[in-house]
Image (cartoon, rainbow, N blue to C red):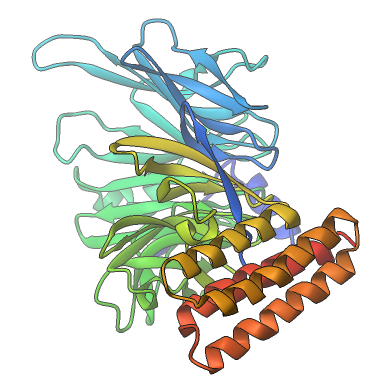
Length: 450
């Protein structure tokens, strides 16, 4: 379904055409991460490392931004009870919504889109799209997207996608659900907007199945092809890569996919081949790295898709970590990831994390921990394990001296030995590949330091 839009967003369409798409660039291997617990709930990261989300004050959620190691409580608009942030741009301006229960029978509830104040010290209501509205994304130009609630007690409670820019609200819902054919059950919502003004979200009509959509260049397109479809679109990067989940031919369940706006192609991230029952993509960074969640035979696990490979994020953190990472919520261009999980010492308590790529020395130490853990588990013999660790310790020593080329040679020797152990049957291919991926990631880090 495609419909053209005669509105204020034509200026954004012109901007979109002025930004040429460039080829997608991937790292050769996923980095290793250190994990820090966060006291608040993280939803979106920007490239400066600021996080939009909320903190709890008693039982109430307060919109908050995490920066420089601490959360800043931005409070709740006057008359409301709860607030939360869901999107943040490069300048640190964030958007979300607040809530108030106004009483009555049946209960009268109010939701209002909010944004951070000019000084960043509080949140304020976006009056032009309130009440009964939700803001989910903002780009660097200040375009805000989300959905407004029809709020006429029809179930399911329908929403109406919008874009807000420079004081003007554009009704995206009428593009996705043409007025002449609209029903009370038609649902649309915009979830994210990139630097060019491309907007993504989902549309579910009474007359058609749910699909992701993209608004680009004045045109709305449903994300479906003869090869498959996206049920939703949760994020879009500046290269026009859209992350969501859906199905391709041969899939028996929904899995994380990427839609390329430039080519119209839908690509699997590899979740269906990883042993996961199903997977969902939540965010995508400028390089095209995607984070999200997969369901496996051991429960929910966070994933990172990078460099053409699909990783359980738990395999990319130190082996001695107490963390079980269940979902990646956001990833920035620095490779930082936020999400939720739990500690093995308190598995019933949800905790929230910030995962930061390790330095070459830290990543090599983490790889040493991984090899030692394989020896302790009996997966790898003591002799072969010690030989591998010796090469890694030599690499750490060379890094400490600033001899990055020599450290890379030591890691290359490690890679050669792991490959030999895989060929000899000493290491299972999957286990060996995890070690190879880690070593290649460190080599890539060292190459950038020379």
